[in-house]
Length: 147
Ligand code: ZN
Picture 1 (cartoon, rainbow, N blue to C red):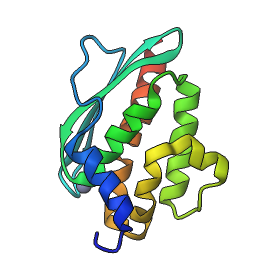
Picture 2: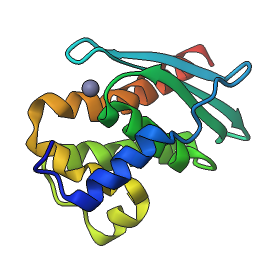
Picture 3: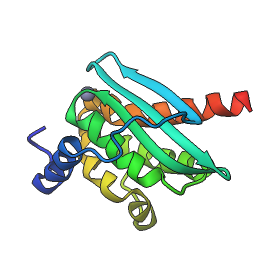
Picture 4: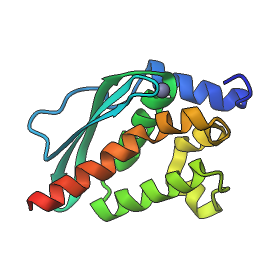
């Protein structure tokens, strides 16, 4: 990952070493266990909802710095978002991982996630970055199918 911008690397490592929201939530409304067999990454995503919005977001798991940093950044951004907004955010991040340059408006939406932009140049690592997002999308789908 040496080709990644140094500043971006620092942001990623900070989220990896000092992960935000890295605590299990009691009785979450949404829980999804994401696993990336290519790298051995695991992210268990948990969301507590109130009035259709994310009240608390947490994750736990293990894996490479990209997967854990992505989960840390994501859970930070999810708080206060409706499920529709969460899905919209996921779509923006997926587009960035497919190599599309984010717009000004999108950059404002994604915050620290911008640091993962360079990951799109490393196809093996894209799955790591997307792991928590896949868990988010699958978790929301599962939740809605139960409602
Ligand atoms: Zn990984």
